[in-house]
Length: 166
Image 1 (cartoon, rainbow, N blue to C red):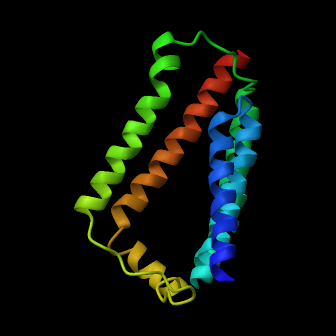
Image 2: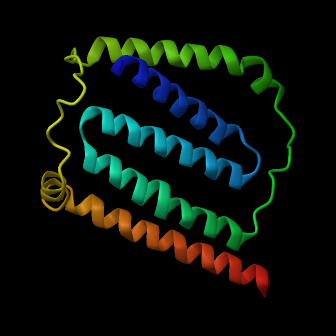
């Protein structure tokens, strides 16, 4: 049963991820990103990381997506306009993509060590205490840099929107 649920939510995550990239309207892309975040939360829940699943839903599918939609609305972004497609991209796109996937598969299979199999519910590092300890000891600098980058992005969106209004 766990394997079936894993494949269902993994397929939902991949389909929503592809839809995210292929959509022409930014709000539709944001909704697809919510689908990806929701399916990842279910996958975390299946692994036994209940806190990570709850944080995924509350922080990412909730707060961050509200921020994305707010910025999209603030910038008044409309649908993407179709542009001219390169003849090289149309002819060589699919073969180059398949070659890239084959090379990446070879590199992963050759250079990465063999991993042990996943047992659902056996993950013990997903508690709030463990995540807080790791986040504020080992990953403190990346955590703070990310928060500063998000603040800069918000300020940039406000500046762009203000120029458009004036």
